[in-house]
Length: 528
Image (cartoon, rainbow, N blue to C red; front, side, top):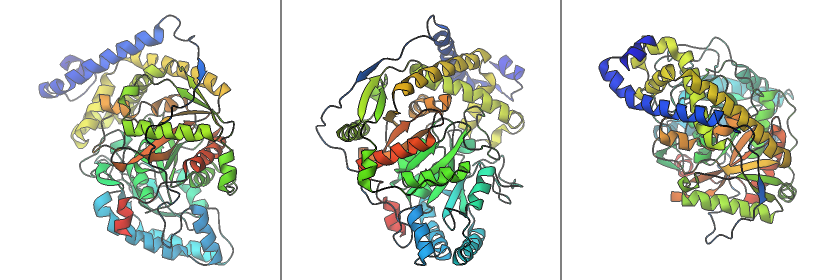
C-alpha cells in the first residue's frame, strides 16, 4: 500500500496507509466486478423488454401535494407572478429584495444556506432593475427577480470558495457565462449558496452543513444544498446548482422543490469549478416547473416559454403519455413512505390517461459503480497538485475520495466508459418507445447527514439519479408527496437527449395532476 501511494506521489504515512487500505480494497473489488460486467459475453446486446403496468391500489393514500407554495414577500408564488406585479406597480424589485435580505438574516442561523450574501450589490441591482421597469426598458424575463448561485460558479469580484479551505481567498475575475445570462435577463444576484466541498459528497467543517427547511436537524442534501434550501425556504425565487451524479435533483427532492439537470452540454459549464468534466451539468432549482422552464430558457439563450395554460389543460398533457418504469433491483432499499408516494403518483398519472410500462433496462445494475469509477480519477486529476501539497486543507472524507481516485485502476475507468456506452444505447431504446422514464428520485427522505460518495450509502443515494449523468439525457425531480416524518419525496422524470423543453412541458402536466407544488416548510413560518 505504501509503495503504491509513493508511486502515485501521495504524502502517505503508515497511519494514512492504514486509513486508505480498507477503502482501496473495496474500490479494487468493485473495479474488478465492473470490468467483468463490462466485458461479459453478450453484455452489449441484451435487449430491453417492456410490459404494461397498472399500479396496484394503495392501502393508504400518500400525503397530497398542496397547491400552495412558499410565497415571496406580498404572497407572490412564482417568477411570472412577481414579474407581473412589478409591471403593474404593486410590487417593486427594491422592496422585494430588501424583504428577502431580511428574511435571509432571520433564517440563516438555522439554515446555513449561504456562503456569501451580496446585500449591497443586490440592492444596487434591484434599484437599477426598478428604474428600467418604470421606464419601459426591462431587459428580460428575470428583471428584478432575486436568484442565487451555488458557490462553485464564478461571480466577478466574489470569492468562489467551493465550500473549501483551498480556494476561500480567491475572487473570480469574471462572471461565468451562466451568470452573464442571468444578468442579461435582469436577475438580481442575492448571494452564493453553500455546498458540499468541491461538490464532492462531504461537508467541510469550515462551512458546515446546510440544513433542511422542512427539518433543520436534517441535511438539505448535496451537493447543491444551499440552492435547494434557499428556494424551499422562500429566500430566493430560483437558484443555480451543479449536478454530476444527482447534485441538483437529490437536494431538490429532499427540500420539496423542482430541480432540472439539462441535457449534457446544453448549459455552459465554463466558469464553474469542475468535479468530473465528462459528467458535470449546470441547471436550475425552482419552486415550480414553470419557474424552472423560465430559468432554463435564460441559461440557454432561448425564447421564454409561453405562460402555462389552466390546470385542466395542463393535466390533459398526461393523457396518452408513455412512461417507462425500470425494474428496480434495489427495491428493498426504498423506504415505505417513498414507495407509497411514488405509487400514488403513478396511480394518479394512470387515472389521467398515462400509459405505464415496466421495462428492463440493461446496464442499470452497474451504473452507480461506473459513475464512481469515472468521478474518482477525473476529480483526482483536477485536484492532484493540492492533494500532494495541501492534503490537510480538505475535509477528511474529501481527501480520502481524492486519494482513492489517484489509486483507482485505469482498467476500471475504461470499463466504466463501456458500461456508460451500453447504458446510453439501452436508454435510447427505451425512449424510442416512451416519452419519459420515471423513478423515485431518492430511496429515502432527507437524512441527518450527507453520506460520502464513495460509501455504500452514497452510492445508494445516487443510484437513480446517476444513470442520467452517464447518458446525459435531461432529468428533472418534482415533489410527489410527503413520506416518512412528513418530509418531501421526489418523483424523477427523464426524457430523450435534447428534449429538455418537452420534458418541462410534460412535467408541468404531471405537477398539475399531482396537485401542484408543495407548501411552505416550517422555517418559512418561523422566518416570515
